[in-house]
Amino acid sequence: MKQIITLTLSLFVCLSSFSQNTIFSTGFEIPIDQTDWTTGMSLSIQEAPFDYPGDLDPWEMWDNTSQAPYVRSGNSAAFIGGTLILEDKYDWLVSPEFLVPTDSNTAINYWMWYYSSTPSNWTWLYIMVYDVSEGTWEIGELVLYEEDAYLYYDQEYSFNLSPWEGKDIKVAFVKRGTYQFAMDDISCISVNNGNDLALTEIQAPTNQNGCTLTANEDVKITIENTGTTVISSFDVKYSINNGLFVTETVSEQINIGETLSYTFIEKADLSAFGDYTIDVEVNVQDDQNSSNDLLTTNIKSKDAEILIELKTDAFPDDNSWVIVDENNTVIATNGVLAKETLYYDIICLMSTGCYTFTLVDTFGDGISAPPGFLNVYYNGNLVGGFDENQSNFGSEFIIDLLGDGCGVADVNSVSQEMVKAYPNPVSDFLFLENLEEGHSIQIFDILGREYPSKVNRSANNTTVDFSNLQTGLYLVKITSQNNSNDSFLIQKR
Image (cartoon, rainbow, N blue to C red; front, side, top):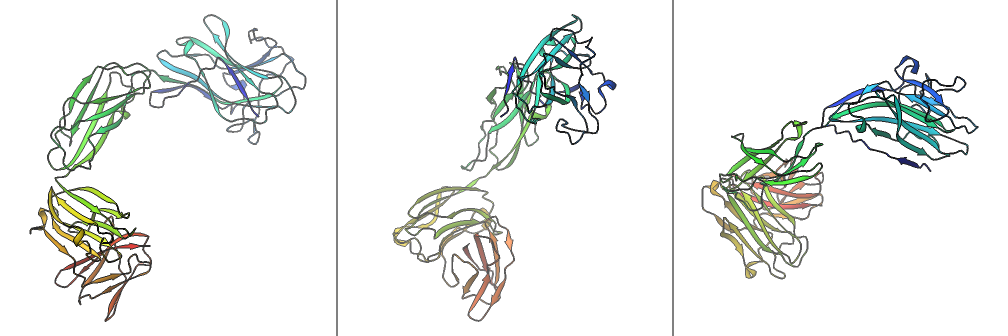
Protein backbone atom coordinates (compact mmCIF):
# COMPACT_ATOMS: atom_id res chain seq x y z
CA MET A 1 0.00 0.00 0.00
CA LYS A 2 1.30 3.47 -0.83
CA GLN A 3 1.49 6.00 1.96
CA ILE A 4 2.55 9.63 1.68
CA ILE A 5 3.47 11.78 4.68
CA THR A 6 3.85 15.49 3.92
CA LEU A 7 5.46 18.02 6.23
CA THR A 8 4.74 21.76 5.82
CA LEU A 9 2.72 21.09 2.67
CA SER A 10 0.89 23.98 1.02
CA LEU A 11 -1.64 23.26 -1.67
CA PHE A 12 -2.00 25.61 -4.62
CA VAL A 13 -5.36 25.84 -6.34
CA CYS A 14 -5.20 27.04 -9.92
CA LEU A 15 -8.23 29.23 -10.60
CA SER A 16 -8.65 29.02 -14.34
CA SER A 17 -10.94 32.05 -14.31
CA PHE A 18 -7.97 34.36 -13.56
CA SER A 19 -5.10 35.49 -15.79
CA GLN A 20 -2.59 32.63 -15.81
CA ASN A 21 1.10 32.84 -16.73
CA THR A 22 3.45 29.91 -17.26
CA ILE A 23 6.89 30.92 -16.00
CA PHE A 24 8.50 27.69 -17.19
CA SER A 25 7.46 24.16 -18.14
CA THR A 26 9.45 21.07 -19.04
CA GLY A 27 8.78 17.44 -19.83
CA PHE A 28 12.54 16.70 -20.08
CA GLU A 29 12.22 15.75 -23.72
CA ILE A 30 15.79 16.91 -24.39
CA PRO A 31 18.86 16.06 -22.27
CA ILE A 32 19.12 18.02 -19.04
CA ASP A 33 22.53 19.36 -20.02
CA GLN A 34 20.83 21.15 -22.93
CA THR A 35 18.34 22.92 -20.65
CA ASP A 36 18.62 25.46 -17.83
CA TRP A 37 18.12 22.66 -15.31
CA THR A 38 21.19 21.40 -13.42
CA THR A 39 21.80 18.17 -11.54
CA GLY A 40 24.20 16.83 -8.99
CA MET A 41 24.86 15.07 -5.71
CA SER A 42 25.73 16.10 -2.16
CA LEU A 43 26.48 14.24 1.05
CA SER A 44 24.48 16.64 3.18
CA ILE A 45 21.32 18.64 2.71
CA GLN A 46 23.13 21.70 4.04
CA GLU A 47 25.81 21.73 1.34
CA ALA A 48 25.31 24.14 -1.53
CA PRO A 49 24.80 21.90 -4.58
CA PHE A 50 27.35 23.52 -6.85
CA ASP A 51 30.51 21.44 -6.33
CA TYR A 52 29.19 17.91 -6.69
CA PRO A 53 31.41 14.93 -5.82
CA GLY A 54 32.55 13.46 -9.11
CA ASP A 55 32.17 9.83 -8.09
CA LEU A 56 28.40 9.97 -7.56
CA ASP A 57 25.84 9.70 -10.35
CA PRO A 58 23.50 12.70 -10.74
CA TRP A 59 20.00 12.73 -12.20
CA GLU A 60 20.03 11.41 -15.73
CA MET A 61 18.03 11.85 -18.94
CA TRP A 62 16.76 8.65 -20.49
CA ASP A 63 15.90 9.08 -24.17
CA ASN A 64 13.63 6.89 -26.28
CA THR A 65 12.10 5.24 -23.23
CA SER A 66 8.41 5.67 -23.98
CA GLN A 67 7.68 2.23 -22.49
CA ALA A 68 9.54 2.92 -19.25
CA PRO A 69 7.25 3.26 -16.20
CA TYR A 70 9.17 6.31 -14.99
CA VAL A 71 8.13 8.30 -18.08
CA ARG A 72 4.76 9.99 -17.62
CA SER A 73 4.50 11.68 -21.02
CA GLY A 74 6.60 11.90 -24.14
CA ASN A 75 9.71 9.77 -24.41
CA SER A 76 11.79 10.75 -21.40
CA ALA A 77 11.86 11.99 -17.82
CA ALA A 78 14.35 13.11 -15.17
CA PHE A 79 15.34 9.83 -13.49
CA ILE A 80 17.64 8.72 -10.68
CA GLY A 81 18.39 5.06 -10.05
CA GLY A 82 18.77 3.46 -6.65
CA THR A 83 21.59 1.54 -4.99
CA LEU A 84 21.45 -1.61 -2.95
CA ILE A 85 23.64 -0.02 -0.27
CA LEU A 86 21.92 2.55 1.91
CA GLU A 87 23.86 5.79 1.58
CA ASP A 88 23.19 9.14 3.16
CA LYS A 89 23.42 10.98 -0.15
CA TYR A 90 21.22 13.51 -1.87
CA ASP A 91 20.33 13.77 -5.56
CA TRP A 92 19.64 17.35 -6.69
CA LEU A 93 17.47 18.47 -9.64
CA VAL A 94 17.69 22.29 -9.80
CA SER A 95 15.40 24.59 -11.79
CA PRO A 96 16.49 27.67 -13.71
CA GLU A 97 16.46 30.99 -11.86
CA PHE A 98 13.16 32.91 -12.04
CA LEU A 99 11.29 35.79 -10.40
CA VAL A 100 8.22 35.00 -8.29
CA PRO A 101 5.59 37.60 -9.26
CA THR A 102 3.90 39.76 -6.65
CA ASP A 103 0.10 40.04 -6.31
CA SER A 104 -0.31 36.49 -7.54
CA ASN A 105 -0.50 32.85 -6.52
CA THR A 106 2.55 31.04 -7.88
CA ALA A 107 3.30 27.35 -7.58
CA ILE A 108 5.59 24.63 -8.83
CA ASN A 109 3.45 21.78 -10.17
CA TYR A 110 5.08 18.39 -10.66
CA TRP A 111 4.52 14.69 -11.29
CA MET A 112 6.70 12.08 -9.57
CA TRP A 113 7.32 8.36 -9.75
CA TYR A 114 9.08 6.09 -7.28
CA TYR A 115 9.72 2.38 -6.94
CA SER A 116 11.52 -0.11 -4.72
CA SER A 117 11.50 -3.88 -4.58
CA THR A 118 13.91 -4.16 -1.65
CA PRO A 119 13.40 -3.18 2.00
CA SER A 120 14.92 0.21 2.77
CA ASN A 121 14.44 3.34 4.74
CA TRP A 122 11.94 5.94 3.68
CA THR A 123 12.55 7.82 0.49
CA TRP A 124 12.68 11.52 1.29
CA LEU A 125 11.98 14.31 -1.17
CA TYR A 126 13.06 17.79 -0.14
CA ILE A 127 11.82 20.80 -2.04
CA MET A 128 14.58 23.36 -1.58
CA VAL A 129 14.36 27.08 -2.38
CA TYR A 130 17.45 29.18 -3.18
CA ASP A 131 17.23 32.93 -2.51
CA VAL A 132 19.53 34.45 -5.12
CA SER A 133 19.97 37.76 -3.28
CA GLU A 134 20.84 36.00 -0.01
CA GLY A 135 22.82 33.18 -1.58
CA THR A 136 21.21 30.64 0.75
CA TRP A 137 19.06 27.51 0.49
CA GLU A 138 16.16 26.69 2.78
CA ILE A 139 13.84 23.70 3.07
CA GLY A 140 10.45 24.60 1.67
CA GLU A 141 8.80 21.20 2.04
CA LEU A 142 9.67 17.64 3.04
CA VAL A 143 7.66 14.73 1.67
CA LEU A 144 8.21 11.11 2.77
CA TYR A 145 7.42 8.02 0.66
CA GLU A 146 6.78 4.57 2.11
CA GLU A 147 9.18 1.73 1.49
CA ASP A 148 8.20 -1.17 -0.78
CA ALA A 149 6.23 1.15 -3.08
CA TYR A 150 5.64 -0.09 -6.59
CA LEU A 151 5.34 1.97 -9.78
CA TYR A 152 3.46 5.13 -8.79
CA TYR A 153 2.66 8.04 -11.09
CA ASP A 154 -0.79 8.84 -9.76
CA GLN A 155 -1.37 12.59 -9.37
CA GLU A 156 0.00 16.08 -9.84
CA TYR A 157 1.43 17.79 -6.77
CA SER A 158 1.94 21.49 -6.10
CA PHE A 159 4.30 23.57 -3.98
CA ASN A 160 3.19 27.10 -3.14
CA LEU A 161 5.76 29.85 -3.69
CA SER A 162 3.82 32.68 -2.03
CA PRO A 163 6.46 33.16 0.76
CA TRP A 164 9.00 34.15 -1.91
CA GLU A 165 6.90 36.75 -3.79
CA GLY A 166 9.07 39.38 -5.47
CA LYS A 167 12.29 37.35 -5.11
CA ASP A 168 14.60 35.75 -7.64
CA ILE A 169 14.86 32.09 -6.70
CA LYS A 170 15.70 28.57 -7.83
CA VAL A 171 13.76 25.49 -6.78
CA ALA A 172 15.45 22.12 -6.31
CA PHE A 173 13.93 18.67 -5.93
CA VAL A 174 16.31 16.73 -3.69
CA LYS A 175 15.83 12.98 -3.33
CA ARG A 176 17.36 11.01 -0.42
CA GLY A 177 17.28 7.24 -0.10
CA THR A 178 17.76 4.12 -2.20
CA TYR A 179 14.46 4.16 -4.06
CA GLN A 180 14.42 4.66 -7.78
CA PHE A 181 12.82 8.02 -8.43
CA ALA A 182 11.71 10.09 -11.43
CA MET A 183 10.06 13.42 -12.15
CA ASP A 184 8.25 14.58 -15.26
CA ASP A 185 6.10 17.46 -16.53
CA ILE A 186 7.27 20.12 -14.09
CA SER A 187 5.80 23.61 -14.50
CA CYS A 188 5.74 26.91 -12.67
CA ILE A 189 2.38 28.64 -12.96
CA SER A 190 1.39 32.10 -11.71
CA VAL A 191 -2.26 33.15 -11.31
CA ASN A 192 -3.03 36.82 -10.74
CA ASN A 193 -4.64 37.80 -7.48
CA GLY A 194 -7.61 40.07 -7.75
CA ASN A 195 -11.28 40.80 -7.36
CA ASP A 196 -13.87 38.52 -8.87
CA LEU A 197 -17.57 38.12 -8.16
CA ALA A 198 -19.62 35.44 -9.91
CA LEU A 199 -23.37 35.61 -10.42
CA THR A 200 -24.41 32.01 -9.65
CA GLU A 201 -28.24 32.04 -9.52
CA ILE A 202 -31.34 34.10 -10.26
CA GLN A 203 -33.62 33.07 -7.40
CA ALA A 204 -36.58 35.27 -8.44
CA PRO A 205 -38.68 35.87 -10.42
CA THR A 206 -39.55 32.38 -11.61
CA ASN A 207 -42.30 30.81 -13.68
CA GLN A 208 -44.98 30.26 -11.08
CA ASN A 209 -47.79 27.80 -10.50
CA GLY A 210 -50.01 30.81 -9.91
CA CYS A 211 -50.67 32.44 -13.24
CA THR A 212 -50.21 36.19 -13.24
CA LEU A 213 -47.12 38.16 -12.29
CA THR A 214 -47.45 41.66 -10.85
CA ALA A 215 -45.92 45.13 -11.20
CA ASN A 216 -43.93 44.54 -7.98
CA GLU A 217 -41.96 41.35 -8.51
CA ASP A 218 -38.74 40.76 -6.54
CA VAL A 219 -35.50 40.28 -8.46
CA LYS A 220 -33.31 38.14 -6.19
CA ILE A 221 -29.84 36.81 -7.01
CA THR A 222 -26.97 34.82 -5.49
CA ILE A 223 -23.42 36.19 -5.75
CA GLU A 224 -20.21 34.29 -4.94
CA ASN A 225 -16.77 35.73 -4.21
CA THR A 226 -14.57 33.62 -6.49
CA GLY A 227 -11.60 35.97 -6.24
CA THR A 228 -8.69 36.16 -3.82
CA THR A 229 -9.65 39.33 -1.95
CA VAL A 230 -12.50 40.30 0.36
CA ILE A 231 -15.12 42.40 -1.47
CA SER A 232 -17.12 45.07 0.40
CA SER A 233 -18.64 47.17 -2.39
CA PHE A 234 -19.94 46.31 -5.85
CA ASP A 235 -22.73 47.07 -8.34
CA VAL A 236 -25.60 44.87 -9.49
CA LYS A 237 -28.07 45.60 -12.27
CA TYR A 238 -30.91 44.02 -14.23
CA SER A 239 -32.81 44.76 -17.41
CA ILE A 240 -36.09 43.45 -18.85
CA ASN A 241 -36.39 42.58 -22.54
CA ASN A 242 -33.13 44.43 -23.38
CA GLY A 243 -34.42 47.66 -21.83
CA LEU A 244 -32.56 50.11 -19.62
CA PHE A 245 -30.61 48.62 -16.72
CA VAL A 246 -31.67 49.17 -13.13
CA THR A 247 -28.36 49.64 -11.25
CA GLU A 248 -27.85 49.44 -7.47
CA THR A 249 -24.69 49.66 -5.35
CA VAL A 250 -24.30 46.99 -2.67
CA SER A 251 -22.18 47.76 0.40
CA GLU A 252 -21.98 44.33 2.00
CA GLN A 253 -18.86 42.29 2.67
CA ILE A 254 -18.35 38.96 0.92
CA ASN A 255 -15.38 36.94 2.13
CA ILE A 256 -13.33 34.76 -0.20
CA GLY A 257 -15.35 31.69 -1.25
CA GLU A 258 -18.57 32.88 0.41
CA THR A 259 -21.95 33.70 -1.19
CA LEU A 260 -24.49 36.47 -0.68
CA SER A 261 -28.21 36.61 -1.51
CA TYR A 262 -29.34 40.04 -2.65
CA THR A 263 -32.82 41.36 -3.46
CA PHE A 264 -33.02 44.48 -5.60
CA ILE A 265 -34.70 47.44 -3.97
CA GLU A 266 -36.44 48.38 -7.22
CA LYS A 267 -39.11 45.84 -8.15
CA ALA A 268 -39.69 44.46 -11.66
CA ASP A 269 -42.91 45.28 -13.49
CA LEU A 270 -44.06 41.98 -15.07
CA SER A 271 -47.77 42.75 -15.02
CA ALA A 272 -48.24 42.73 -18.80
CA PHE A 273 -49.03 39.30 -20.18
CA GLY A 274 -46.42 37.59 -22.34
CA ASP A 275 -42.80 36.45 -22.27
CA TYR A 276 -39.93 38.26 -20.50
CA THR A 277 -36.16 37.99 -20.79
CA ILE A 278 -34.42 39.23 -17.64
CA ASP A 279 -30.64 39.88 -17.72
CA VAL A 280 -28.83 40.32 -14.39
CA GLU A 281 -25.21 41.42 -14.00
CA VAL A 282 -22.70 41.97 -11.17
CA ASN A 283 -19.72 44.32 -11.45
CA VAL A 284 -16.74 44.82 -9.16
CA GLN A 285 -13.75 47.10 -9.58
CA ASP A 286 -10.68 45.46 -11.20
CA ASP A 287 -12.73 42.37 -12.08
CA GLN A 288 -10.41 39.53 -13.09
CA ASN A 289 -13.02 37.49 -14.93
CA SER A 290 -15.99 39.00 -16.73
CA SER A 291 -17.29 35.68 -18.08
CA ASN A 292 -19.13 34.86 -14.83
CA ASP A 293 -20.81 38.26 -14.36
CA LEU A 294 -24.05 37.73 -16.32
CA LEU A 295 -27.07 35.42 -16.04
CA THR A 296 -30.33 35.37 -18.00
CA THR A 297 -33.73 33.92 -17.17
CA ASN A 298 -36.89 33.65 -19.27
CA ILE A 299 -40.26 34.22 -17.57
CA LYS A 300 -43.79 33.65 -18.86
CA SER A 301 -46.61 35.78 -17.48
CA LYS A 302 -49.99 34.20 -18.32
CA ASP A 303 -53.34 35.83 -17.77
CA ALA A 304 -55.68 32.87 -17.37
CA GLU A 305 -55.89 29.77 -15.23
CA ILE A 306 -57.84 26.55 -15.16
CA LEU A 307 -58.40 25.13 -11.70
CA ILE A 308 -59.22 21.41 -11.53
CA GLU A 309 -60.70 19.91 -8.36
CA LEU A 310 -61.15 16.16 -8.78
CA LYS A 311 -61.90 13.19 -6.51
CA THR A 312 -61.16 9.79 -8.11
CA ASP A 313 -62.91 6.47 -7.51
CA ALA A 314 -61.73 3.17 -6.03
CA PHE A 315 -60.24 1.79 -9.25
CA PRO A 316 -56.51 2.50 -9.66
CA ASP A 317 -54.93 3.63 -12.92
CA ASP A 318 -58.14 4.16 -14.89
CA ASN A 319 -58.64 7.95 -14.56
CA SER A 320 -56.65 10.67 -16.34
CA TRP A 321 -57.20 14.11 -17.80
CA VAL A 322 -55.68 16.25 -20.53
CA ILE A 323 -56.01 19.85 -21.71
CA VAL A 324 -55.33 20.62 -25.37
CA ASP A 325 -55.45 23.86 -27.34
CA GLU A 326 -57.12 24.57 -30.67
CA ASN A 327 -54.20 22.87 -32.47
CA ASN A 328 -54.53 19.74 -30.31
CA THR A 329 -51.24 20.57 -28.62
CA VAL A 330 -51.26 19.14 -25.11
CA ILE A 331 -51.09 22.03 -22.63
CA ALA A 332 -51.21 19.92 -19.48
CA THR A 333 -51.96 16.43 -18.20
CA ASN A 334 -51.82 14.83 -14.80
CA GLY A 335 -51.10 11.38 -16.19
CA VAL A 336 -52.74 8.29 -14.72
CA LEU A 337 -54.31 9.16 -11.37
CA ALA A 338 -54.29 7.22 -8.11
CA LYS A 339 -57.49 5.83 -6.64
CA GLU A 340 -59.65 7.63 -4.06
CA THR A 341 -57.45 10.72 -4.13
CA LEU A 342 -58.40 14.40 -4.06
CA TYR A 343 -56.47 16.40 -6.70
CA TYR A 344 -56.19 20.17 -6.84
CA ASP A 345 -54.32 21.44 -9.94
CA ILE A 346 -53.84 24.94 -11.36
CA ILE A 347 -52.90 25.30 -15.03
CA CYS A 348 -51.60 28.64 -16.36
CA LEU A 349 -52.33 29.63 -19.96
CA MET A 350 -53.11 32.54 -22.24
CA SER A 351 -56.75 33.64 -22.40
CA THR A 352 -56.44 34.31 -26.13
CA GLY A 353 -56.38 30.55 -26.81
CA CYS A 354 -59.18 27.99 -27.04
CA TYR A 355 -58.88 24.89 -24.84
CA THR A 356 -60.59 21.57 -24.26
CA PHE A 357 -60.51 19.65 -20.98
CA THR A 358 -61.12 15.90 -21.17
CA LEU A 359 -61.50 13.53 -18.22
CA VAL A 360 -61.09 9.88 -19.19
CA ASP A 361 -62.19 6.71 -17.42
CA THR A 362 -60.79 3.63 -19.14
CA PHE A 363 -63.15 1.29 -17.27
CA GLY A 364 -66.13 3.08 -18.82
CA ASP A 365 -68.20 3.86 -15.72
CA GLY A 366 -66.91 7.35 -14.89
CA ILE A 367 -65.68 7.72 -11.32
CA SER A 368 -68.75 6.26 -9.66
CA ALA A 369 -67.56 3.41 -7.44
CA PRO A 370 -67.51 4.96 -4.88
CA PRO A 371 -68.63 8.19 -6.53
CA GLY A 372 -66.17 11.04 -6.98
CA PHE A 373 -66.70 14.57 -8.21
CA LEU A 374 -65.20 17.20 -10.56
CA ASN A 375 -65.18 21.01 -10.53
CA VAL A 376 -63.39 22.93 -13.28
CA TYR A 377 -62.92 26.70 -12.89
CA TYR A 378 -61.78 29.13 -15.56
CA ASN A 379 -60.38 32.36 -14.09
CA GLY A 380 -62.30 31.69 -10.88
CA ASN A 381 -65.64 30.86 -12.55
CA LEU A 382 -67.10 27.37 -12.39
CA VAL A 383 -67.47 26.22 -16.01
CA GLY A 384 -68.24 22.54 -15.65
CA GLY A 385 -68.12 19.37 -13.65
CA PHE A 386 -70.38 16.98 -11.78
CA ASP A 387 -71.23 15.96 -8.24
CA GLU A 388 -71.34 12.46 -6.78
CA ASN A 389 -74.83 11.89 -8.21
CA GLN A 390 -73.63 12.58 -11.76
CA SER A 391 -70.29 10.77 -11.68
CA ASN A 392 -71.27 7.84 -13.92
CA PHE A 393 -70.45 9.63 -17.19
CA GLY A 394 -69.03 6.64 -19.08
CA SER A 395 -65.67 6.85 -20.81
CA GLU A 396 -65.18 10.61 -21.20
CA PHE A 397 -66.27 13.89 -19.71
CA ILE A 398 -65.44 16.91 -21.87
CA ILE A 399 -65.49 20.64 -21.18
CA ASP A 400 -64.59 22.46 -24.36
CA LEU A 401 -64.41 25.99 -25.79
CA LEU A 402 -62.50 27.40 -22.82
CA GLY A 403 -60.82 30.73 -23.56
CA ASP A 404 -61.45 34.00 -25.38
CA GLY A 405 -60.03 32.56 -28.59
CA CYS A 406 -62.99 30.22 -29.06
CA GLY A 407 -65.40 32.93 -30.18
CA VAL A 408 -68.43 31.32 -28.47
CA ALA A 409 -69.62 30.84 -24.93
CA ASP A 410 -68.22 28.03 -22.80
CA VAL A 411 -70.04 24.72 -23.19
CA ASN A 412 -70.24 21.93 -20.63
CA SER A 413 -71.04 18.63 -22.27
CA VAL A 414 -70.97 14.95 -21.58
CA SER A 415 -69.59 13.13 -24.60
CA GLN A 416 -72.12 11.07 -26.52
CA GLU A 417 -70.89 7.53 -26.82
CA MET A 418 -71.62 7.48 -30.54
CA VAL A 419 -67.94 6.68 -31.12
CA LYS A 420 -66.38 3.95 -29.05
CA ALA A 421 -62.64 3.31 -28.57
CA TYR A 422 -61.32 0.13 -26.95
CA PRO A 423 -59.36 -1.44 -25.35
CA ASN A 424 -57.85 1.22 -23.14
CA PRO A 425 -55.06 0.69 -22.18
CA VAL A 426 -54.07 -0.64 -25.59
CA SER A 427 -51.22 -2.94 -26.48
CA ASP A 428 -51.26 -3.42 -30.25
CA PHE A 429 -54.56 -2.38 -31.90
CA LEU A 430 -57.18 0.19 -30.93
CA PHE A 431 -60.73 -0.47 -32.21
CA LEU A 432 -63.08 2.39 -33.10
CA GLU A 433 -66.82 1.90 -33.65
CA ASN A 434 -69.63 4.06 -35.06
CA LEU A 435 -67.45 6.34 -37.16
CA GLU A 436 -69.02 8.45 -39.86
CA GLU A 437 -67.75 8.15 -43.40
CA GLY A 438 -65.04 10.53 -44.46
CA HIS A 439 -63.57 10.91 -41.01
CA SER A 440 -59.86 11.53 -40.33
CA ILE A 441 -57.81 10.11 -37.46
CA GLN A 442 -54.82 11.83 -35.84
CA ILE A 443 -52.57 10.62 -32.99
CA PHE A 444 -50.69 13.04 -30.68
CA ASP A 445 -48.44 12.43 -27.68
CA ILE A 446 -48.64 14.54 -24.52
CA LEU A 447 -46.14 17.01 -26.00
CA GLY A 448 -48.40 17.62 -28.99
CA ARG A 449 -46.23 15.75 -31.49
CA GLU A 450 -48.25 14.01 -34.18
CA TYR A 451 -47.53 10.40 -35.13
CA PRO A 452 -48.47 8.67 -38.41
CA SER A 453 -51.66 6.68 -37.95
CA LYS A 454 -51.85 3.24 -39.54
CA VAL A 455 -55.61 2.72 -40.02
CA ASN A 456 -57.53 -0.28 -41.36
CA ARG A 457 -61.19 0.55 -42.09
CA SER A 458 -64.03 -1.97 -42.42
CA ALA A 459 -67.81 -1.81 -42.50
CA ASN A 460 -68.22 -2.44 -38.77
CA ASN A 461 -65.17 -0.93 -37.14
CA THR A 462 -61.84 0.81 -37.70
CA THR A 463 -58.53 -0.49 -36.38
CA VAL A 464 -55.62 1.82 -35.43
CA ASP A 465 -52.18 0.22 -35.11
CA PHE A 466 -50.45 1.18 -31.82
CA SER A 467 -47.86 -1.61 -31.91
CA ASN A 468 -44.94 0.61 -32.91
CA LEU A 469 -45.66 3.42 -30.45
CA GLN A 470 -43.75 3.83 -27.21
CA THR A 471 -45.42 3.30 -23.84
CA GLY A 472 -47.26 6.43 -22.70
CA LEU A 473 -50.39 8.56 -23.11
CA TYR A 474 -51.73 9.51 -26.56
CA LEU A 475 -54.59 11.68 -27.74
CA VAL A 476 -56.58 10.16 -30.61
CA LYS A 477 -58.53 12.88 -32.44
CA ILE A 478 -61.32 11.91 -34.84
CA THR A 479 -62.63 14.61 -37.19
CA SER A 480 -65.78 14.05 -39.26
CA GLN A 481 -66.75 15.62 -42.57
CA ASN A 482 -68.75 18.34 -40.80
CA ASN A 483 -65.65 19.13 -38.66
CA SER A 484 -67.12 17.72 -35.46
CA ASN A 485 -64.50 16.19 -33.16
CA ASP A 486 -64.22 13.19 -30.89
CA SER A 487 -61.10 12.79 -28.78
CA PHE A 488 -59.88 9.87 -26.71
CA LEU A 489 -56.97 9.82 -24.26
CA ILE A 490 -55.42 6.38 -24.77
CA GLN A 491 -52.79 4.72 -22.64
CA LYS A 492 -50.28 2.56 -24.57
CA ARG A 493 -48.73 -0.29 -22.59
